[in-house]
Amino acid sequence: MHLTLKKEATRPPQTNMLQQQARFDSFLNEFNRERPHEALAMKSPADVYSASSKAYTGLPDIDYPFHDRDALVTNCGRICMYRKKINISIVMAGQRLGIKEVDDGIWLVSFMHYDLGYIDLEQRTLQTIDNPFGTRLSPMS
Image (tube, rainbow, N blue to C red; front, side, top):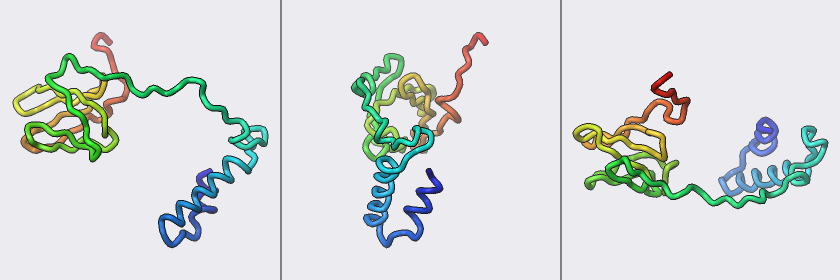
C-alpha cells in the first residue's frame, strides 16, 4: 500500500499542501472503496468494514495517590511547576501526569502506572526513561 500511495499520490508532488491533501484523499477513497483487495477475497475495505458495537469512552479518570501532585499537560506539550515551564511532549497534551519529588529539585513524572522520566527544575528539562512502556520485571525474578 505504501509503495502504491507513493507512486500514485506523490509523483509528481502537487504545488501546495491543499492540492497534495486532495490527492491523498482521492487515493484513500479509491483504495478503500473501489479497489478489490486480495486479502479480502477481492472485496474493498468499505465492503467488509463494520463499526464496533462498543462505544469508546476514553481513558478513566487518572488519580495519583502516591505522588506529591499532579499536573495537566498543556496543548503545547508543557507543564508548569513553580512558574517554570517544562516541555513534556505534545503527545501527552490534555493528559494528567503524576509528579513526585525524589530528590531536591528532581521530580519523577508518571503517566498512569508508567514512570516517564525525571524533571530537573533548575535545568527545566525532562530526562526520559529509555523505554517506560517496555517489559517490566518483578523484583522477585
